[in-house]
Length: 211
Image 1 (tube, rainbow, N blue to C red):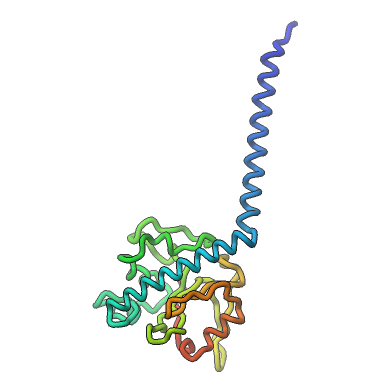
Image 2: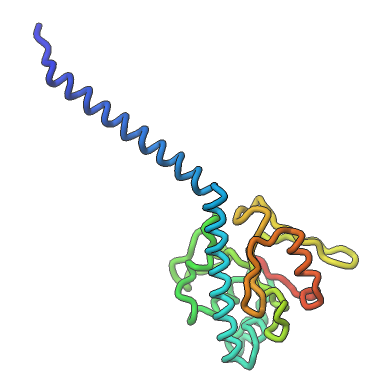
């Protein structure tokens, strides 16, 4: 019985090609995961978040200029502000107040956040937001904290609050970013510096609304 060696060789060649493609895809996935968890990549993402917060700061300052030097949470909802939204469930409302000057709600989600970005402002909510709001911050207090990464955590003691970054929420691990009222961004803030900032006089009564 004769065997068609040409067809057999061709069949093996196709099988080899499939195996090679599978291995290449597997290695590509492994390489991608390794790179996204590399310190350099994480630093780039943290820098991107810092830039996002800086842009939010610019928009807030623009809002304040148009509203008698007041942030949205200092203006009643009857006048287009968000003063009455002081609970964590309505944290996203403070950013909707900036929807006319922010290009898209997608910029309000960190790349390392497990949450999904909102496609439109109509579908935007806490589940699409990576940043908290300091509703006690004011333009008159340049050192007050306006916003920052949502994985911030704290407990209240007898005389002060103790702050830290919650690693189990992802984002930037044990460091994070803070937006100050003067428009500056404190990047790569560790827990020690975090406590130093929030124990300044202008932040002692600053209430945080975390989504």
